[in-house]
Image 1 (cartoon, rainbow, N blue to C red):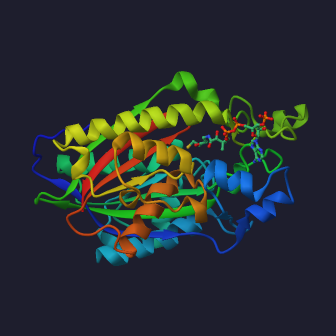
Image 2: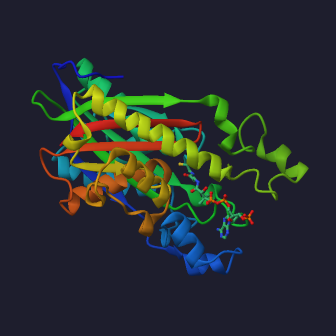
Length: 337
Ligand SMILES: CC(C)(COP(=O)(O)OP(=O)(O)OC[C@H]1O[C@@H](n2cnc3c(N)ncnc32)[C@H](O)[C@@H]1OP(=O)(O)O)[C@@H](O)C(=O)NCCC(=O)NCCS
């Protein structure tokens, strides 16, 4: 956890990139698969469509596109990158990690690597780790990536979850600065007691696929995201709101100092409840859930990249990032661009 005392170095966002696969799954498509309607999905979640990978496209493929864009905008060379932090719960393989595969794919030969598993809050966790590394003086240039191929862990027979999720990657280049920009405050928190509100029962070492397959659990969607949506909803609103107020205070600011909020795009009603709690107008909260759905750890960097590209976020802006996910995990970060 960083605090408002002035560190010698800060981690400044110097580039961002994102990628979504071309294929789109609309609400009308979902109406043909499960008992739902465009009207229900739109009013209960704010989602109109989401992008879905083909079988051939992997998370590392998507992340590579996003990283190339971030590295180019940062004006870095491949060999400049000192650490690659990938947030994902849908890695291509259990071994090697997505971050190692990205290193090889992009020729980031001087980098260390790590994958972080904090579900939808993964990017905020990765950015917080990167910021601490840079503040400590250990590294100067770090890539943080959020990438998910959620379509592979979505049960398209369960209307309570399959309407929500999409595939995407977002990447952010963080670089040492000595000015008053960069990550000003970060806060991370979890409550492992609530892990089974959003979990994947099968596929880990506790319940390997082969055993589960024999028991018929895979047919029941046990190898996919299982969620108690209404409970997750309540925790998300409460915890992201508390985390937001915490980082604003840690940065020595008030909500009126926030120029833009980039929240995890899980449900428009969660985002609206947060906005109201923070007393912010609609134009200060970036929303793209209608086009991408919930892309888990890719959600915040994807939204950030869009907001930067469309100049909704500009140099000097104070940006509040918020995320919440399975674990349960959550976090917030206040960044001056
Ligand atoms: C999943 C979510 C959209 C469901 O919305 P909700 O308003 O909580 O709905 P509920 O789960 O209470 O279900 C209400 C009714 O809608 C029905 N329903 C659920 N999904 C439906 C769908 N896709 N289409 C039509 N009806 C649906 C339920 O069966 C239930 O019917 P019933 O009252 O006859 O039993 C919402 O809970 C949510 O977004 N939760 C947080 C999700 C999240 O953020 N997850 C990831 C964390 S990062």
